[in-house]
Length: 374
Image (cartoon, rainbow, N blue to C red; front, side, top):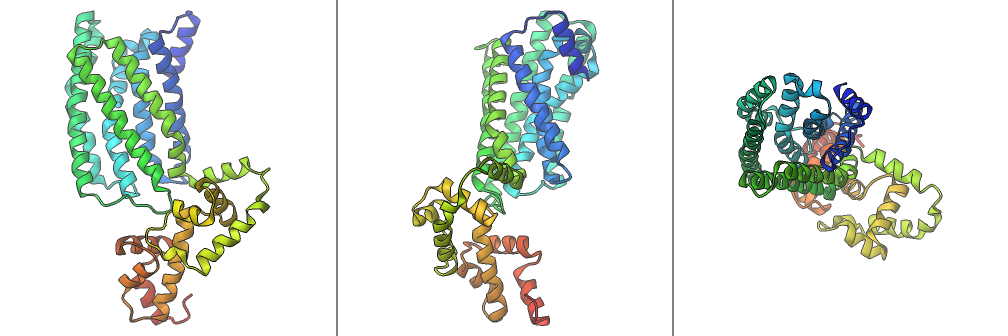
């Protein structure tokens, strides 16, 4: 609500926005929009809770410097303190979001302890900042407070990045599931680059190489660039079916009959040649065998099979694995997984359970007890 009053007050008083303030306003709108949009879809995918919190924290960072446009809010220690605390949680939420992309699910509660770093470490800074607002601090004191805030961000960000490196060293490959891995990789790289660049800006500010205004402008540009670079990948990761529906509607005028020769050729490769058994099979290799581009192949799979590449290949692998588990009850499950194209028993077990709801062992045991099982 205070944001609406802030903007109304600014426009009613004919305030001229600086370039930094304009960038912050431009960044605030999409941050709030993405957070609200993802929040409205929580019932469809409860894993969006961390992205919602992350973009709300990002919005706090955009809104905090804009308080000077609305003096009443600027002098309110609770509004100012809430935005400051929300901004300080950005790196911690970034850590949780990266962990979620790697795990393929919302991190366990133990991981959320990372939020204690900014909450505890920033308590003194928050209290001092709120007291300065009440006392109408001088320009010098406020400048020192901004430097202290930048220094705190450096320390907390460095510590959380250290935790992230430790986690990366112990984590396995990103869970692929039914989502294209490249979008998760892109989001992880973008998150790391965003926080590294913000860390560099804070270091330059502390070192005296840039002023407070230059630092704020640089941070706004970096954060705004991040938002527009990742918004598409976010939707593809959390709502792939929605994106596919939009793409299909956008190509309604396209004559899909011209795809039919490639569709038939693809079916032959899958059903007769059983190309899915190749453990190193990827979209580029399959597109090359069909003599078409990767983007064209994805469009064919999306429209004619209503799946993405990983879903299509894994569905053939799991179907053959189910047949082998029933027909050959002596063969080791590990060998079956490798034979149908999986490169590890862990990925075989995970995908099998995603497709059937039970593990390969449970499936075989059920088939033994109930021979009529499909």
